[in-house]
Length: 133
Image (cartoon, rainbow, N blue to C red; front, side):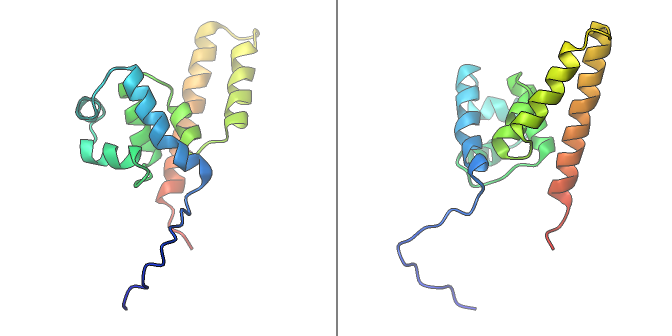
C-alpha cells in the first residue's frame, strides 16, 4: 500500500501528558547532573531508547519508568503522572491519606506506600501489555 503524500500538516495524537514526559525527564536528568549515557547505564536501558523517550518518540512501559526513576532517585509516580499512566490527583490523595493516618506507625506507613506503589506499577505494566482491541 503506497504512503499518502505529505501535506505539510503534522499531527500529534499522543495524549497531552505523554508530551510532558520527555522534557520532564530531561529536566530531572539535568538536575541530577547525569548524562544520557550514564542514566542508561544506571537504569539498564539503552541511551538510544532514552533519547527517543526524551524526544517524545517512544512511550516507555511502567517497568522502564520505574528503572529510570530509581536511577534518577525520584519517585516512579512522578514519571507515571508525566507519562499519563497515573492520575495525579488520585495518587496524591491516596498517598496523602496513608501519610497522614496517625493510627499506624511510620514503618507501617512506609510498608503501605511501598505496596500501594508496587500495585500501581504492576497495574500500569499490565495495561501496557494489554493489546488494543
